[in-house]
Length: 270
Image (cartoon, rainbow, N blue to C red):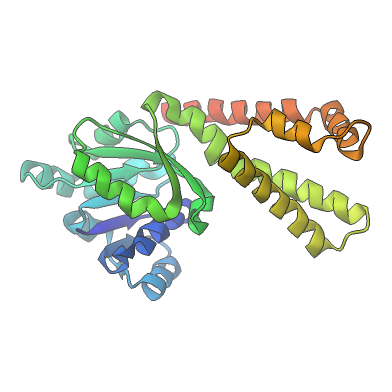
């Protein structure tokens, strides 16, 4: 089995790295306009750098780490190869991570009916802590799904969802790391304002977010229950919670996710 990765930027690189860490590094072909990126993957994982056509000829799975606005051009470059492989009965599985583009649209751009897996990962996949939603066309076999899950296991948690939930899920887990980074940065800045050294303030904020998330995942507690356990009557935590409510932090986060969701829908229409 050969795996190809076209586009190894931030997100594509995180997913390609996870595939390599599953033990398939020497069976991974990479293609990117940035030669430094392909050289780095070749050095770290033993991947082979090739052009997109060669990759499309050889790969059994083709991961598309392409931004939505460039997807049509990239698939146009390999359309003839894909059509021939479909006719020969050796069609690869396309794995797309482009926000807003449905599996039907990917097939339309590819010019042929071939198996498609649509994923929405996030950047923490690069350290094995990602959240990866996925959905498949009806012609993706059980064996193909199993192989897909195994090669992406090092990326983090995989969760199958209906395609109509992908855009909403993307707004939460795909965009969420940026939202959380704003919170961590703000907490660290406040810590510095209170006298903490910058490095310690950043570590305290980030580790606290990590630990809180791990606790919620492991215990299954509702966030409100956990919050109440931390919040003592008349204490410092409730004073901070009140300040956050006054500042509209909760409403702001909801608006951020909903704005991201609307943008995902817009990207799908272009």
